Amino acid sequence: MRNFALLPAPDSRLTPAVIGRAATLSLYDELSLSPKPGLVTLIDCGSHDDMDAHTFMRSLFSLRRYFVQIAEAGAAGADFAVLERHGIAAEARMLAATGGVNTHRGAIFMLGLLCAAAGAVLRAHGDALDPAALRDALRRHWGEALARRSQRPPVLPGGIAARRHGLRSASEEAALAFPVLFETALPALRKALAGGLTPRQARLDALFHIIAVLDDSNLAHRGGLAGLRDAQRAAQGFLDRGGIARPEGLEEAQAIADDFVRQRLSSGGAADTLAAACWLQRVCPGS
Image (tube, rainbow, N blue to C red):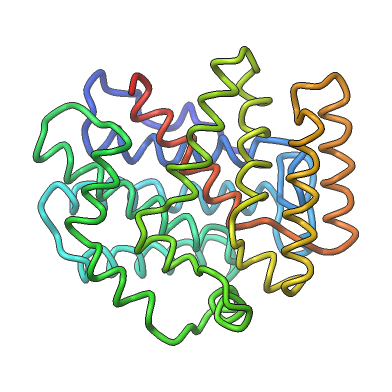
């Protein structure tokens, strides 16, 4: 398996190249984490028969330039149509790299928008990023376009499931400047790290916080509304019992992951949101 020594060395300044590299590394943060409910890890395929860690790594390497390009577009003041063209081209490269398997469509959308917002913030304020400025940039530069996009008839399985069950779709989440990411995922990740958990434990803790509240259209597509609600209850129950910090926390997390696999559930939207939280932690470490 290829490794990230092949990536360019990090710059001491925040630039589009550094922003894009952080996105790629954050997707690897998510991939390398285990145990995860129904998701691909470095050691298992979760609830998926058509992909494994090698598929994800091929996808990651196909997307490296995209995240830099879209950060550059944000820094250049590009409108949403330009960002969308970058995303469509990145999706085509992903599918070519994976033999037609969708590994990162949601991340192309979510992390791409965040990289563009980071570029816009750097253009306006120089070498400094913070979560509030990123949300403001999303709303100010592309909020109206994202709101219009969220009203399009859905064509992908997750969007169709969200519309069928009256859930907040990924497009609607973006139009609201990603409330689950900024109001649940990032605070949970930072609280866990500040409380002394290891990076692995903190990311797992954040993942369960995300699953508990996110209208994850991937779960709704695979398991219907009942499957989504069962997954949310399982995650919230895990947190209510003390979560990953308990001595038996990892064992229970594995049991929940195994149960997701038995039900063929996969929390793909939560995985994208976790990767985005890891990205925020990388680019806004001191905020």
